[in-house]
Length: 342
Image (cartoon, rainbow, N blue to C red; front, side):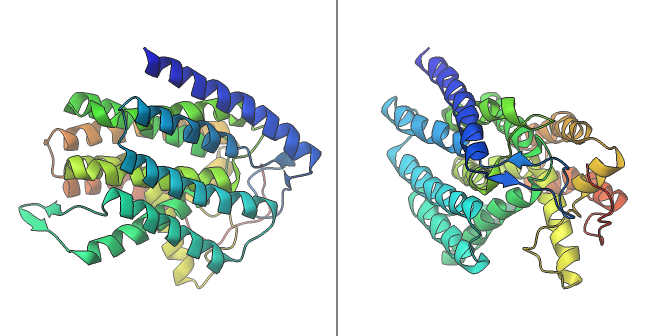
């Protein structure tokens, strides 16, 4: 019963704090001004993702004191999450050079991996892979990539919020069906904190998440997948399936832009979801569509993998195949036409 009250409190704190941050951004002129690389046409306050961070971070010590979270996990997520949020908040207020931003991301990832014990041995069909220290290098790169890809995918109203909520609830369903309820608490709290923010970010958005929120979400979701991997490798693959839309779109687009020698950290609007939003002339349609993909396609596959019906690698490949097709159809990563803005 206490947990459900906590869940309600997290939602309320996030919702109210987002309103406060919106007024603060308007007073301080912290606005996202549309340009040729924007997917919106109206100046909109930014930085509302801080509400997600505050609501989630306040709940973590309570979870630990309720014995729903180990203190090692608390220290790992709390310390790294705050580093990411502070870097993002500073970048929202004044641009930070990419190399220093990346350095901070790697420091946060190293902190998290220290407390989460890195990446556990994984299985590739019948082969057990234990790469020792190199597995931690892979985990470090993985966490930083998850952080940045989520930032890249936060480009239209409500999308990053809806993705986080649907993925977290999908993971909670898997944990419940798999008898690993001890892992449910953090995804539930994260979903509640994002839901409070979504009240103001739903299309048409009245405030944007900003780097503080998007980076924090990407990092947290990546960290939750690593936490699950220690309980069972199949749970890690399930998380990779649940996050498939963001992983495939961001990775496909990055590879095409890198091959073209574009400045990969420069703002653009050539992701599949951005082309789709212009084709359908609606952020809401694309956000709903991606949630539908998560619910109707990715979550069932993730459940099958978690229950042992498919090997994780096979499940990921099967899940990603139609997503690659969608990236091809919407021409993700192609040179963009700057003449259209929503």
